[in-house]
Length: 332
Picture 1 (cartoon, rainbow, N blue to C red):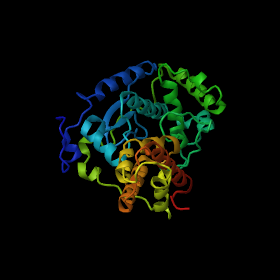
Picture 2 (cartoon, one colour; picture 1 turned 120 degrees about the vertical axis):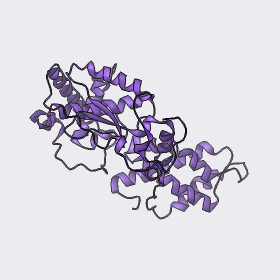
Picture 3 (cartoon, rainbow, N blue to C red; picture 1 turned 30 degrees about the vertical axis):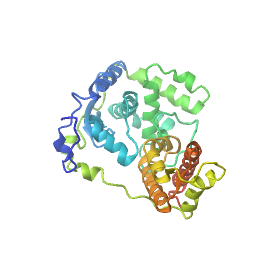
């Protein structure tokens, strides 16, 4: 596929996307070499699909199709505020996490009593809107959003990913985190016991490979609806952009607050997700709503107040994100 912009009406299946011949190829080769170093007598099967994942009971790792084309990655960032695998080291982080699922499913670790005692039962309901406890020392930190706290299946995979990361002294890193460290030690004992052992499962069936994705680019990247905002958001934005500038000697003109917010849409959703667990697509929609309100109110950023407004807006968005994570709503 050419590096030009794909047409919006084109179906994803017709883009001819592959891992081979793209920047993903050497990253995947590096990851597979890491897998070989584990001493297991198999390799996972890698393929492009709609999102990261391992179909339950398989050893096949799905990689988001947008990582195979720079223009699609740009669209992903523009519409959802986050790219899961924006650089080589980040792609490797996700691959190591998914390898945790592969190992669990290949050896049916989730059926073992010691697994259930340490991580919990994977029969526990799996919900997307989990409510993490930031900085809990009972879980490792690997993927953003305190992802290990989502479900026992993810807790194991995040623990495995930390354990698998080359050059990471996880015993030192988690020395003051006894519960998380115990999980890592459990993973280390488990993996040493599995070296050379044939797996119980070698199924590598694919779940919606990119060649079967019927949706068009426009359908995948249609604009997001913003969530209901709490009462008083207009006043909050006035506080950020008007009241914070009251002690400035600069004239009240300056940059449009709407454009100022738009500039934050590139990076803020990912960072808010990293520290709160508030999904990037929600933060992105929230910022779009704020942008429209700021434009309607004709709010401005006084010259010299840019850094202060960035801090204030970030704090406001983070507070709203925390409210959503805790209560399932921005509303009180």
